[in-house]
Length: 128
Image (tube, rainbow, N blue to C red; front, top):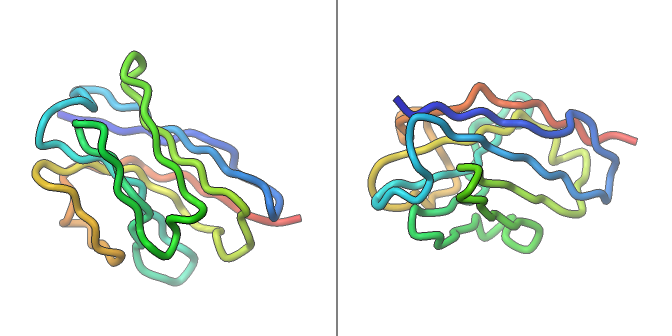
């Protein structure tokens, strides 16, 4: 069973870059036909897809966030990382990493059933 665990700072200041890491166990991030995503949920709102990386290493981004987003991976540690730059209070949310079998999921709106496995989520608050 694939398990995911997010880690990163809980509080960042406006204009800074937040970096989050997802550590994966029970499966390899290089597995073919497996797709790994970052998703967030702002307070009182639904789930929003940020971007993802396929087992091949190809990356995909939500067009509305692409300018500020970078997703990479460290295959030796079986981790993938999100960097979101120039953050504002509107980026305050619970950030999740998730995985699904099959093709990349590139729709901005996400539902829980769109992914097979989820991390528990990590709160990121942007405040001065």
